[in-house]
Image 1 (cartoon, one colour):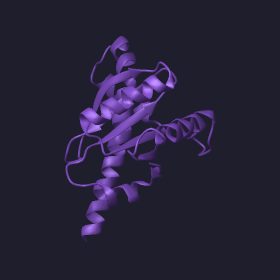
Image 2 (cartoon, rainbow, N blue to C red):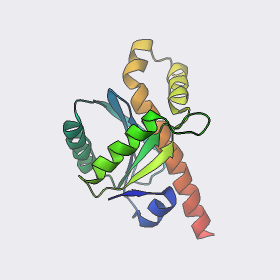
Image 3 (cartoon, rainbow, N blue to C red):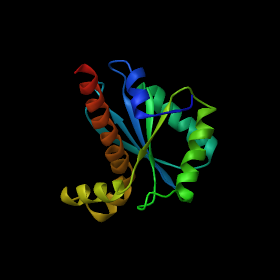
Image 4 (cartoon, rainbow, N blue to C red):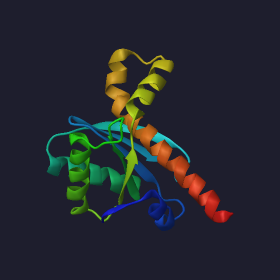
Length: 160
């Protein structure tokens, strides 16, 4: 399946379907998944990137196990709003994944998500070494939580 906007996704999701968050890096993929009520994003273990085919299989296996209805993937837009090479790489990843799965992808502006995730881990007094291991999944959870909050506000607006 192709990409959807968050508004389109809110129209297609059924109750009890979790959503996954992805923070795509060059060496790792940070993962997070929502609860069934789509209120809370929980970090999952980071995937070490190998090559695309293997990464896709691992990601789709994770999605099947968690019964994921959609992926919210962080789009690393520059601070001035422009698109750089990381945005192009993310879009290429999603295009290639779309050939392998019907699970839709939603882009989410991830500006400052890693900074916010790092700040949260520091506040939790997580050691530097452990922060390095967890930062990508914490960033994925931060990305997903933003999207979940927006989905919640869209649901409230449609009920009014």
